[in-house]
Amino acid sequence: MTTTAETRSGSDFAELNRRINAAGLLRRRPGHYAVRLILVALAYLGGWTAFALVGASWWTLAVAAFLAVVFTQVGLVAHDLAHRQVFRTNAPSARAGLIAGNLAIGMSYGYWMDKHTKHHANPNHDDLDPDVSPAALVWSVEHARGKGFLVRYQAWFFFPLLTLLGMSLKRDSVRALRAGSVKRRGLESALLGIHFIGYAAALLIVLSPLQALAFLVVHQALFGVYLGLTFAPNHKGMPHPDGTEDYLRKQVLTSRNVRGGRFVDVALGGLNYQIEHHLFPAMPMPNLRAAQPIVRDYCAEIGVPYEMTGLLESYRQALRHLHDVGAELRAGRA
Image 1 (tube, one colour):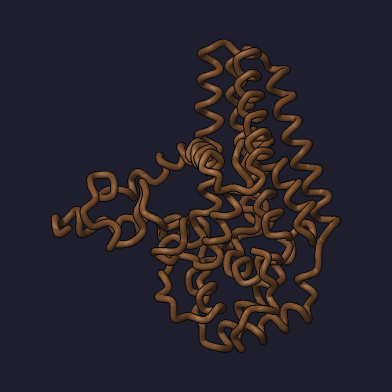
Image 2 (cartoon, rainbow, N blue to C red; image 1 turned 90 degrees about the vertical axis):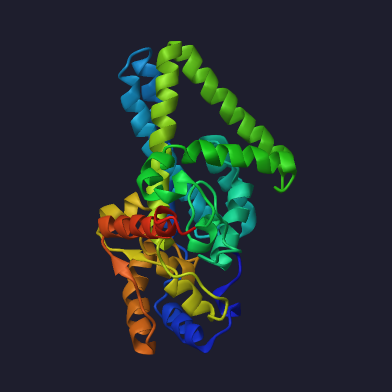
């Protein structure tokens, strides 16, 4: 993710890169991120303050829902930190990322960054993109063959499975740390341990056992759903590359943009401009909106399809793709 745009080959991309640079859209936006980081931090602290003030009441489930939203926003901030959109150099980005990922939401920053780097290098590639590797859900007909009931009707299980995403990322974080595949293993493990212990202690000290369990389920389930919904529209159901594409086409043809105003920008953390983000991963999130018409018009100029749809339609396309992948299984042909 730290590769600069200038080092990428391909004359088509070079011309687009020149236009984006001429518009000043790769410049840092420190004011925007200062405000955003402060607001997210205040929301995080405010959520846990409300948790303590509400106390042993079933109204705590409303706090759980609020904190699910806040945790996702913290995750989106960690995403921007990993891409060096906030700070120019790696050291402050990594420090802030460890605080946001490991300490605040209980997800290994190093594990996620490694996984996400592989995704950006080969989006939607069946063998090289970990986001489409076959797991509970399968994204290609080839990987679906020989699978069972879940894959056969996986479109129906998509949203229910998202409720487990937050816990799944925590489990995978612990596995990566135990396997030693994460840099700063000791520091990341310590910060992750502080999060887990602090989270469990808060629930068990403030709430009754039944309320603590309910809080855990509601908070982690809604966190998983919201986090999953920020990523699901971006590539699911889009073409899978065959390895012959140049950089520009590999990124554009596998990505989908989502229409919407400022609310969608904030809710999805700028990931609704997925095409622009994949072409220029270090571009600050608030610049993506201005980059979008430049990229769209340039793609039309060179004859590259540019996919953009509404939010609900993007989910419908992803679900339809999942359903189509399981078609041979439902017909008894695989």
